[in-house]
Every structure is written in C-alpha cells, then in structure tokens.
Length: 334
Image: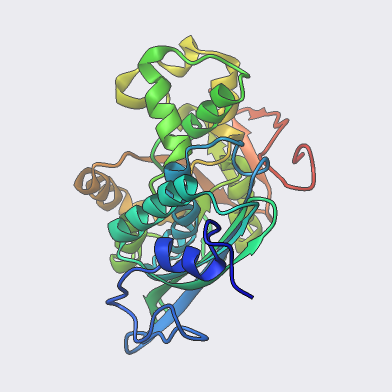
C-alpha cells in the first residue's frame, strides 16, 4: 500500500531526521542491526533511560533541548562508570510525525552526540504517546570501571557542580516558585540542558582518584544511599560542607527560600557525580577541579554501617531527613 504523499512514513522519518555518518562504527543504521568494533581490551558499559511526556519532561518542552537531554542523561550514567561514550540507540513513540518538532529534536540529540563523540547507530519508531528511550554504550579498559560497591571505610564523599539548581529550574517551570532574574537562566539551563560530567568521570578513573561513583539523578540523599547500600557502609554528610552559593556567585542559600535548601539534598535532575575517594587524594582532586573548571566539594565521609545516610549539623548533631529524592512509584522516599 502506498503512503499518502503528504504524510511522512516511518522510514522517511528515520532517514530524514535520524541518520548521520557513523565514523566510529563498523556498520551504522540501515541494516537489521549495527556492527560495533570495541577497542582491544575494553569492556562495554551499557545504560538505558526512558523519558515520558508528563513524567520526565513537561508538555511543550523545547524539542531541541529535549533531544540534548534525552542523550545527556544516559551519558551521565556512563560518566559515573568512568566510561568513554561511543554509541547510542534511540527508540521513539510519537503521536504524529511533526516535521518542526522532529527537526528540533534531532538537532538537539545530534548536537549532544557531536559534543561527546557519539555515533547514533540505530533504534525504532512507533506511533503512540510521546516516549523516548535512549540506550548508550561506552568503553572502559577491562577491570577499571568505577562501581557503586567499591567505597572503603573513612573514604571522603565528594560531589561535583552545584546540586539543587536543576530542581529550582523545574520548580520554576511548574509554577511552584518564581526565581529571581539573576539566576533564572542558569537554573533553567541546568534543568533543560544538563552537562554530563564525562571528562570528570574519565579523569577520576584514569588517575585512580575515585573508588566508587554514581550520578545524581534522583537527589543527593537518595543516590548517596545507593552508594552506601552497595558499599555496605554508612555515609555521614556534613551540611556545613555543602555548596552554599548559586551559580556565578549569586546570593547564598541562607538568603533564599527553604525550597533551595531542600533542593540541594533531594532535588533531582542534577546529573552531577557523587564519588568516594581516599582522604590522601584531596589535593589531587582539588587540582582536577581547577583543571576542569568544575567545583568539586568534599561533603562527608564513609563510616561503619550497612547503608544509611545521615545528615550532620553545625555541632555534629544528627539532623532529621524528611525527603531523600524522587521515586517513580512513591510520592516520597522516607
């Protein structure tokens, strides 16, 4: 059966918007499967994330920013392993083939792919509610991956960047708060166009600076708990060591709303790296942060225990934790 001349077919849609040269790939899109050629001695790290309209992004989200984010959130997982990103696959559920939306979305995803050296090697499209699923693959020299279960007793806990500002951007977009103009763009950019810490993850792995690592997608406390549980230790986070400023030297936390203080601990969408390191590597980690022009904060340490996270106040007292982060099947993580 011939398709209507004014309706974009599935195969035309793929050819027009999602096929580009794949110089890092033995065989790219167009066959029944792609052929990949991993480097000698490398292990392959594989991760997959789904983004659903109304759950992971707001209806009406700029398609170019959405394309970037769809790939970037997967690259954040690879970064947490210390992997070099290499390939990605994209599966889309689309209610209709909107040319303008597809042009913006594909521009965003290929912009991110070019920035981080990725070949898009295949995927699938189908009719349905707007749903995006990206699978990303990266390479790691065998036996060197950063894992969640490798932290040791008395290790320091570090975090990159400025946790919480992406959650503020989301709260602004949802109308839950109004951000002051001087920080609005920075918070929205961090929420809508996250920067996966690929260079940081690779440097931590290459220089044996980090032992265990995880990317912060559901909230600092929630993801710290994953590290603690996997490593079979407790984590004590010192609230006095948490970052106190917004981007570019904006007003300190104390001058803003309680929403910010909550966002630092339990806001999602940061896509920063949380990692453990031996105390004797503090100077080296500080130097790496300067080299990458990325703030790295030592915020706590690993102590005896079996997987709990505690917050410590200014006098070392234990503070209550009311909300750890985002969970798809529970309103709160308690």
